[in-house]
Image (tube, rainbow, N blue to C red):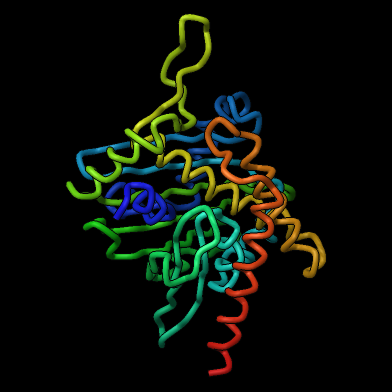
Length: 295
């Protein structure tokens, strides 16, 4: 397996041990503690990003205010099928299928390269989907997968949403994964070749001319992937007020516009190429979902 393919496969994943239990008061306290960072930052929006790395785990976290009331955002993020509509916006997600076997809700997520691929060429992740907490002002959703490629394991995506006022919500996205020697070597190979000029978002220093030096290495990979995923959530929520038939096109355009706000880190495809690829993938996804429903 090539280092570039491994990067794609590790894309939308997050393990448990770095993720701590949270609730509405905890997230509200975090919002207050981040007031200064949300008000002034390099993203030019109320957003804060951080990443961590231990001996065998990586994690990325984004905290952001979004311009949707919780009464709208909360219900929209609870349904498993809505998550397929959200996840397919991401460049590397080639397909998503929602299913339920008894009490077990599962998202089969195919993750691949940045160009069009058949599903057979993408890696299938099996995520267990759970709405862990849903109250009048707080939502916590978790997606968990036990195994991944090259010995990676303990994958999880966690999304928390908190009501702020009648117009805004506060969002926390956390994602991470466990990796072993094989995955580490493959990622280091990627970072030494194809990904050698890639950087993340955290500013870790300055050049002699005063230009920012950004986080690189594996933490840079996590930061880029976390941002791409956040932009999918943001684009999905941002189109909720539109008529249903207009939402898909708006979400695709908003995701690409969001990526292009940070070309140093995230530029991959021109808008026309991204839209054409995603339209084909969405049509394929809808056909597969409808076929499963008929069966």
